[in-house]
Length: 281
Image 1 (cartoon, one colour):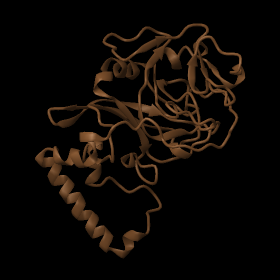
Image 2 (spheres, helix red, strand yellow):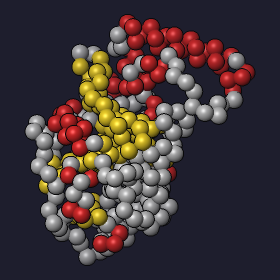
Image 3 (cartoon, one colour):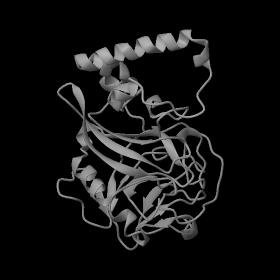
Image 4 (cartoon, helix red, strand yellow):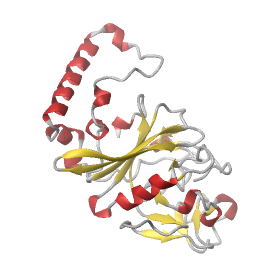
């Protein structure tokens, strides 16, 4: 969602949704299929980890994020706990929880390896990032976790090559974010009577941000009221978002042309280090 207003904050509970099947693309499988060079680097990282455990000084966490290590040089999907089980993965990583900028990369599993297919600067919520399973609506935070990508939408036509389901925005297209509505966290057209306009988004009101977008499956399949609604990967606005991830327009078009539903794409959102490290998801 674009950063436009503060919504009602209501505590909720529930599990992180849309993690997908783990299968052959988990960290263990990725290690098993890694190239010899990657496998050697992983072995060196494991050895370094054992030495760190043996050192009493390592028990105290650093005050600032550590400098790049050997592990950081391993392609990110190999270091993740789960990549969703498909052959396509988008990673959205910020330096730390309070960051409002970072990097989006997209990855393709091909010939037994993960290949980086593209990269772009990214923006996150004005409130930074927070654990998706405990996020509260109205905090302008981007939820961390691993999610599927149910469908795409936009005011502009879908880019050439788009195969994911793509809905065109019309004047009466809304995303319902009213906690009291039975249509909570859903595209509605037209807006139902139980979905207050002041608590929702008329998609056509954001011609830049919603020129093209992908729905992120956060709190989507089994919505928990109060957890948050309308979390998308969309085109940059003027600054930070209200909880979405955004990228430049050209990058958004490239992602939509690249993503394939048949390859079960997912997006992982997280930080470089700490409790919300992207490697946890």
